[in-house]
Image (cartoon, rainbow, N blue to C red; front, side, top):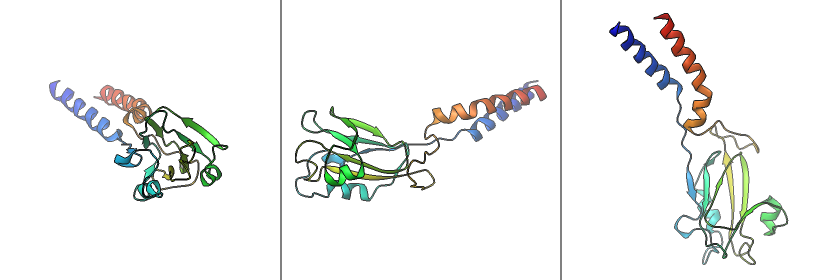
Length: 167
């Protein structure tokens, strides 16, 4: 009996290990050590910052700024290009702000304080799926273990129950 239970436990471990997938999201601090502020010497600071990064669905952008001195607004492309908040999707004015990238495609962010966006306090990021797709609106599979568990937990228990009953 002891050998059968050891084999059953080993089988359970193998099934669990083979069905769990770990996805890791990345949190990016916008502007790195500079944070989210009006660029002082390079008006392309945030474009340059985003250029060497690959953003995928599930990643987070952390905008570090002082409340009352800046904000972060997600806007449409025309709002981004014109530095206007007439096409605002959302605005957060209490720093720091963490924004989760929930879909593929382009995201546009600006500071709506007068003069800040025209001086370069704006950011465009292109978000891909896990597979590299950038088609707007495509959602990737869950990027965390908890979400993966919900999908895999029932088949795992069914497999375990079947194995135990057959032994």
